[in-house]
Image (tube, rainbow, N blue to C red):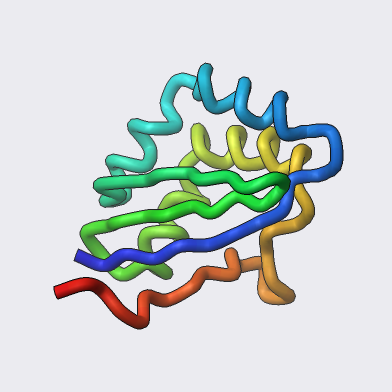
Amino acid sequence: MPRFCYTFELLPGTVERYEQEHREIWSGVVEAMKRVGITDYSLFRRDHTVIAWVECAGQPSETLRALDEDPDNKRWSEHIRTLMHDPLDHAQQLRISDEIWRMP
């Protein structure tokens, strides 16, 4: 099963609010993730750096594209991204990190 992660930086003063938003995730967001084939999604934070770890049934780029098209996820992303520096690259894609090693 493909796995990947990506990182982003929270804006100064937004850590508490970012964590609060994730204690009360909006209705439909988790369901949208499941619909596009995400089987596991975790967030880790150190100071203002957030690491998102994702496992999905399909190719990560296709999974993320489908998720971006989901109306529930689109509203959530637009909202939550107000708390962070832009996590997208020049092509408006998440800067994902490919897995290079996994413990056998």
